[in-house]
Length: 199
Image 1 (spheres, rainbow, N blue to C red):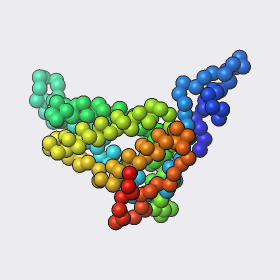
Image 2 (cartoon, rainbow, N blue to C red; image 1 turned 120 degrees about the horizontal axis):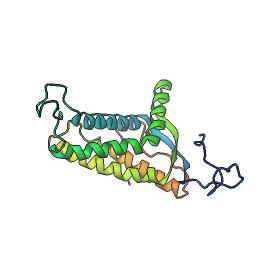
Image 3 (cartoon, one colour; image 1 turned 180 degrees about the vertical axis):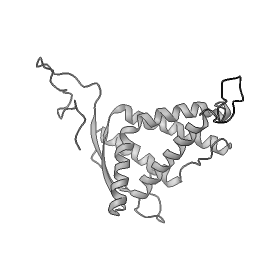
C-alpha cells in the first residue's frame, strides 16, 4: 500500500524540508494488514454503520412539512432530546469522520471481493493512534444506539453478536500491530453456522 504524501519509511523521521532539515511528522502513521477477513462480516458491519449513521442524520433533520414552530422555522423530524438522539447524532458524525481512513479501504475490499466472488478478503489500512482511539468512541456510540433502539427511539437494531465480536477482534488486532505484533489471520469462518472463536 502506498503511504499518504509526507510519510516516511524511516521510524521517527519526516520528509525533508527544502533547507535540508527534516520535518517531523505530526503523528505516527503505520500501514497494517487485515488477513482472511470474512466478506460477510465486513459487509454486515459496513451496512450496519450505514443504516445507523443514516437514521441518526435523519433524526435531526428539519421537517419538510409545514413548520410547527414559530413562523419561518421548522421543527426537527425527531426532537433531538428524545432518547438523547441529538447527542448520539453528534457522536455518530464524529465516528464517521474519524473512521473514514478505515472504512474507505474496507469498502474497496467489499467491492473487489463481491466482483471476484471471494468469501475472504485481505486489505491494508494506514493507522495512527487517533484512529485507534476512535474505536473506543465507536463503542460508546454503539452502546448508546442499542439503548435507544431498546427504548423505541431508533429503528436500527444493534449489529448481530458475531459482527460485534468481529469488530472487537479488529480493534485488538490493529492495537497489537501498532505495538509491533505480526498480522494474524482472522479467526472467524467464511461461512455461518460455526462456533465463534474464543476470546
